[in-house]
Image (cartoon, rainbow, N blue to C red; front, side):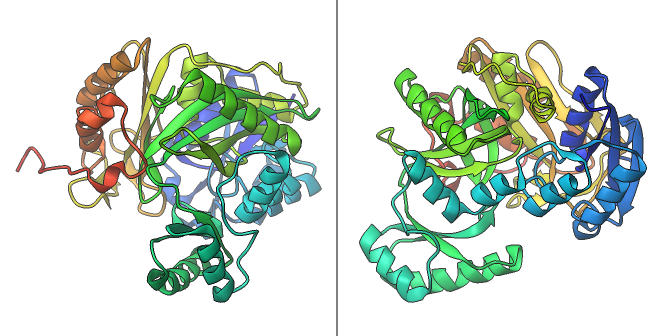
Length: 450
């Protein structure tokens, strides 16, 4: 087992990893930018190393600085969390070259599944259902136009290196194709340094349902059930739940089997997520695979009583998995609390938190790195907390979430707490009748103080 793990991340996920390491008797090293000097992950780690100024490109994405921090502290493993370098094949390889275990996928696996067009071809070979679309990367606009005619409108243009909704365009007719092609490529080039595009049939009224999987070094894999991530804004998830209110036992069995088949086909090692689009007829199609821990992993942990970070560490240390598939025996909901103003187009709201009162009670979990007096920097993702409630039924979990949101007080900055509170009363949400298009018709109204 590892003696010391460096966490190459920040905020709540860094603190989350530190907690499990401490429970396992493993020493921890936090890295931080100057903007994060007062973050809780820095305070609770056994050691902390400043790796640069606030800009991510000069700190959390600066591979030489992170490797140097690991070497001077004698860390024998690095956990990348999610985001930043968690799916960077070059970083995974450099860790290996320096004799440091990367707690995540191998460079080859990240390369194979990180490129979405390549991943789709791999999944086809594995016999996993895929959305109809282009055969790999589109060569040029003529290829794009020809493929759209074959697939049939509406289509979705996607950047092969994309993420977070960038480099994606829905196209409903041939007249819209050229501006969508040019816009998506420019956006992708600016965000990822890569303007390669591929195309898929646009699935109407889709649910976004993902299957959590774990694989070990022997090639054995299992699934830990699904998460419904359909409530999104600009392809960014806002809230998730497990089990999905759209799921049936038959569909869960088929999707779980497909996800395990995918993981075993590529001999996947570590925790990962196979993401699917599910149409209104419950046909499911492979969308992408994330070769890392997900933001929403706590709801899976809650419904099956399983520490996914611990499992990641054990698998990385060579411990085999049980191979058992898990089914949810409780209901869990996660609300992502962002420092954003939901009454003003979800505009970011960094600044100093003057007051914070955390909710508690049975079945309430709060993963956060902030506190009263903490200043939220403007340099990073706006998520500051994840509020999770767990109960015997969906109705009880929703009622618990309403109560917890009412208790949750954050002053000094705007947050998405009012949005989540409104969502918990929305009739379509209460009925479990929502798709990825839910937010297009959602209206917040006006703040109470107005």
